Every structure is written in C-alpha cells, then in structure tokens.
Image (tube, rainbow, N blue to C red; front, side, top):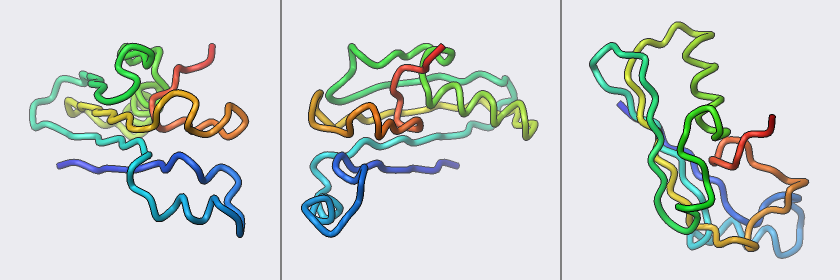
Length: 111
C-alpha cells in the first residue's frame, strides 16, 4: 500500500495573481510517496530522485519527511517497514522561499 502527496513550487502565498497559474503546472512539483511493506521491521528508508539528489539528506533523522514519518510511526504504533520516495522536480532557487518552507517534502530538518 502507498500514498503520494505533491507540493507545487509556486503556491506559497496563493492569491489571485500568477500563483494561481502555478497550480495548473505539473512541471515543477515535488512528490513524496510512502510505501508500506508486509514485513514487520520498523525500518524507514529514504530514496531521493530528481533535481536535489545531492543536497537533500537521505538519513531519516536529518530529513523532514523522515522525521515526521518516524514520529507518526511512534505515535500510532505503526510497525511496518516503510519506504519514503522523494521525487524533487523543483530546481534550486525556483521553489518557495524559506518563509514558505514545506516540511513534508524532504528539506533538511532543523535542529
């Protein structure tokens, strides 16, 4: 079983201007897919593809998506082996500024 979420690159302050047009584009969006496996191991893995392969951390403890999934597993007693796939299509500098940070898309977790 899996679930996928997408985050467009230009909808930080959605208004009646050009940001609305950004909703209609699928060229620049990040996708997060979480897949569960049958074996009971409590293991979480992260695989990154696309634009930011080298700049996005793949270690669960250093990745916002990994931190959130790990906490949800603890809070809800999820014991399945989970794989997080991050598909980064938003080129560096083309996404939302830090003030519009998207915590579910694999940005580095703050400490």
